[in-house]
Length: 368
Image 1 (cartoon, helix red, strand yellow):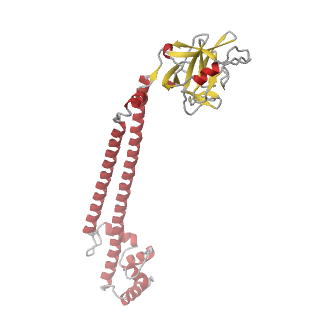
Image 2 (cartoon, one colour):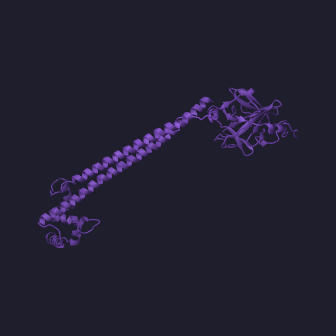
Image 3 (tube, one colour):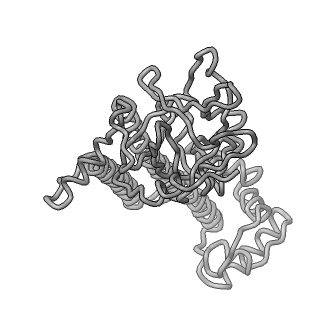
């Protein structure tokens, strides 16, 4: 049992560590995604600047052909007339002012850009853009994105990456530190040392001679594989999660009352006895259903554990917990001595018990 407790503690620590590691890697993925998204945004801003550069190149090329700077409404009226005269395309002076930045504009139509590109000798704006990329178009102060802006983008990206790395390191330190703190056993105070020791080292009965009417016990199936006994309504039950019937959420203690050479299973929580029909009753000596004593049973050691034996009509039955029926009293393993996790039990001593009420029920005159 001590070995199984150690394994459960180890698995619990592994579960906590893996949970925190999962959160850490999730944060890492989020930060990485944000870094990637921001980098893409910076790249897009460079392409936008490149587009603005092409607009500026186009405007400068138009001004060079006209030998005229575009500053006043009269300048844009003159350009509009020249477009009509030379290539037969009409563009309003207001639209041209938007392109030159003298009027607010949300978008610039591709058709307008195509007209201006044809005006300076290109097939369309796409042809002009390709020429800009190949370096065929030269314009003053417009060949590259402003160096200061490039440096600011570079500094921003570097600062963002450093900040992301700082967040990752801080998260890693936090999770490692919290795991160390949670896994380190607390120092018990003088007032709680005894109770802490009792919880850390549960006491299991190893011999029948150690059983006492003055103690209460948690009844475990072998290695807790079929749960721990408790109660469900007016029935004994088990915490075995796969049991279809008589399953309880929490275990509860029982007393193993010895009386006139027999044992009686007494629910401390319900203050009732368990009978052979798996009901909780306050009449443990009642003789019914052809049974002389329907709550009495024997406890015997078996393979380092204990077995509950019930005798009825010359047949032997055992208390069992199985995945098909849950808590049951049947003859599985009783006649052929086949035992498994469901009918081998261990008793954990969980504290003192006053048996006065239980013994008074066993000393009453049995009913028929």
